[in-house]
Each structure stands twice: as structure tokens, then as C-alpha cells.
Amino acid sequence: MIPLNYYLLFAAFLFSVGVVGVLIRRNAIIVFMCIELMLNSVNLTFIAFSAFMGNAIGQMFVFFVMTVAAAEAAVGLAIIIALFRNKKTINIDQINLLKW
Image (cartoon, one colour):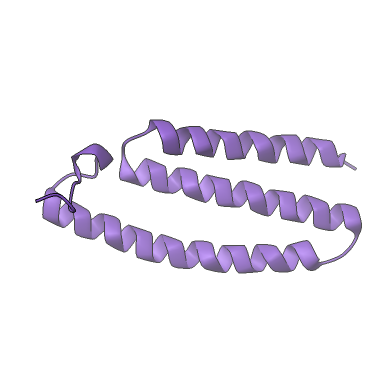
């Protein structure tokens, strides 16, 4: 049996990698993948606490988070494709749709 601390440390590491990726990278696809990495680290935390407490509430939260992540992936990729068709780039710094 792996202790709960190991799961939480790994989830914190994954979340911090995702945060650093969102703050540092300028490619929209990579930022999108880092957001998904942060969602998966939260899912790992839910599952770890669910197994530690011995109930299925965390697993139900993971189901809902995965549903929201799937919808986000569909909508987010559609937005990224639309931006690429209009601007011919996926660099976040070069996308300025709100400026005249």
C-alpha cells in the first residue's frame, strides 16, 4: 500500500508543472495541455483521498471533472483551430482579436 503522502506530493508536482507551463509557454496548444495536466492532478488528489477515506465521493467528483475536461477539450480545440485559420499562428502573444 502506497502512503497518501506520495500521491499528494506527486499530484502537487504535476499541478506545479502545469502552472509553470501555463505561465511560461506562449503556444496555445501547450497551454491547453498544461491546463489538462492540472485537471488530472486534481483528479489524482480526489482519487487518493477517496481511497484513503474509503468512500466513493472522490470518484464521483473525478467523473464530473472528466466530463467538464472533455467538454473543455472539444470547445478549446475548436477555438484554437478557428484562431489558427484567422491569424495563421497559435502563439498567444500574436493573437490580439480585441484590438482595432
